[in-house]
Length: 194
Image (cartoon, rainbow, N blue to C red; front, side, top):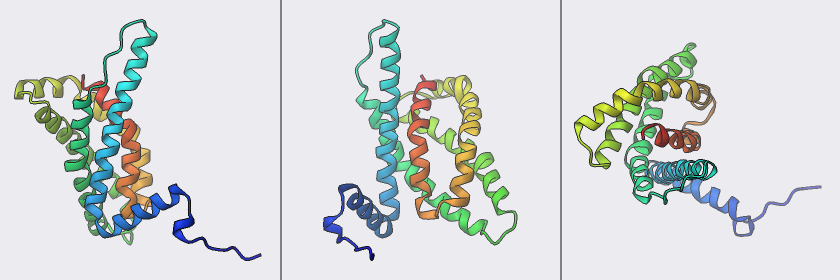
């Protein structure tokens, strides 16, 4: 029995949303990835706040109100930094380490884990410090207090996902894949930076 294709207008909402995303991704790749990064980064921060509130409520302490400014800072970081920087990094990785190189799997992973991850985490701390309107002393204090811990956790959590992302996910979807993982990662970072 032949399968009949449905016109797009008759498809489900989720299918139409995905199709629209793919169109925008092809037409405006950096902008689409930036907006997606901003939204998912803010959601990660909100998730952190929600989980922290539940934890406080279970222990009998009063939960704080949602920090909209905090979620906004994460959205700005995702929009201005995560989307464009990740897009460019993944594109350059394809040029620098093509799949024809027999060691590309190892080289890509090492590049991401040993160069990109520490630098990107440092950039995260710096930009968040600026967006929070805090001074250099506060930046240095947070770096000393939690950077190394966050970087080690990054290596533990992100390495398997990074391996999958840079070797099996098509390049146009790598930022989206990383953003889906980052939704939970930003929830962790929001907690560890406090």
